Image (cartoon, rainbow, N blue to C red; front, side):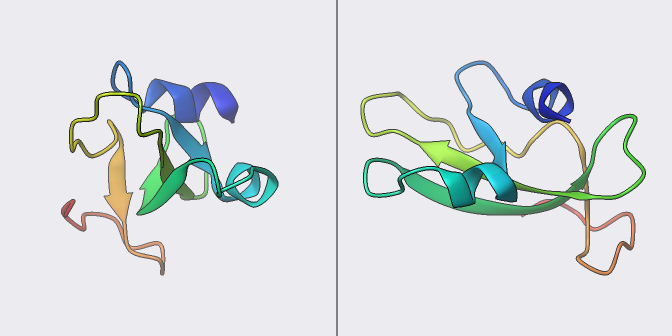
Length: 79
């Protein structure tokens, strides 16, 4: 699962699952919820978050995966 999440990120982008976000200290970084995405090889959508560190440059890019609605519907365009 971690490899699939990492594969959806662009260079310099840090993505994480909800489980990781719950485990990290968010007082040192900011976290942006990106939505649910279908990742290659997984049967269920994964909710992805972007970890934002002030010291790192950041571009606003949607993960390299198909975004889906929270109901599991495929084809919802990225925001």
